[in-house]
Image (cartoon, rainbow, N blue to C red):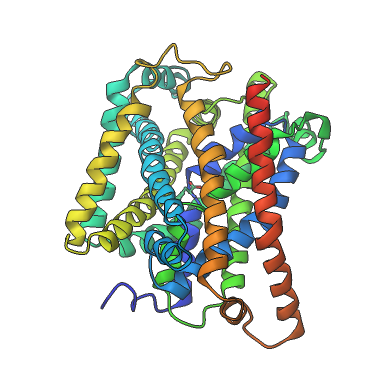
Length: 455
Ligand code: PHE
């Protein structure tokens, strides 16, 4: 059965799209980004942008894939040929971002693996896990080879899964255990919300103080919306190219956005009470999740067990996202070079990405003194990639969605029933795609650039 024809039932598509969206972006990146941007007001801005800019673009990316039946590189090439404009550069940008992001993502997945093994070891050792929170992150930061090794293990597992053609099965299997992860997060959430710091956290998160927002926060929120919903990478285009006719794109888009946003909010509610109770202030560092959670688990009964299952589930969710990214790069390579076998393409893409992981893995030692406006290498790379390049790729998606489909095509794919509400929604979506998304992206980029030069 070919991969395309096997995308039979809709549930399986949901599992895959949600599986790609939910990952480290929700549990690791979102909490410290909210912390960095001052809490409640940013959260509100983020949710608003997720359901306007994010949802609009998610539907558009699925539509491009569904209509053209190809990945982003080929779709952009067609538009470029038709309009005689270099629009294929956007396609290349998306593939480039996917490759670099996977390299960077693998290093963070390596951190997860490190904690997973530490929890596993503490099952057999007398050492208290409070020891973990203090020393593990330091060990990682100072040991680039260890980071590289862990990232390589993670990436190799992803490569083998894609090469062997197990990607769909594994993705579906992991996605189907995600609800279990959700239950675990809720159990931990209840425990963390019983801490004394909860009232302060709720005030911080749900009593928005707009004076804490800067103009550049718009750019940070847009970047994260794209990252967490897997937009701008071409992943959703590839997914869209797989599923069968008559899919309800707006409904799929809405559900994926809803679940992803819900998980991000749960993550913040889980992490912040612990962070507040330990330092009275939410940390704004990428190590937030990794330092705070073991600290908390050390005090809880059965903490080792919870920690073990938590980091295992987190790693599986991240593995799912990694497979999606590698699949995107591989699918584009196969379409570009059809003479290469799919498995060979996956090896080539995988090893190229493995080479790239050297840069983030060694950032703590080789680029130790690297600082841009007080930020270290990893944070600078993260901002440049996710808040800078990704929205530009998103702009490319808007252009491709507008040029590769005619108005009638778009309308047909969007409007399922002939009800006036559907037509109304279509008009809103088209307006958002044509105007709101590009304007917000450009404003976000502009404000960040302004902040950067006037620092
Ligand atoms: N959305 C994923 C996350 O939040 C990251 C990702 C991006 C996965 C692009 C696949 C493709 O962790």
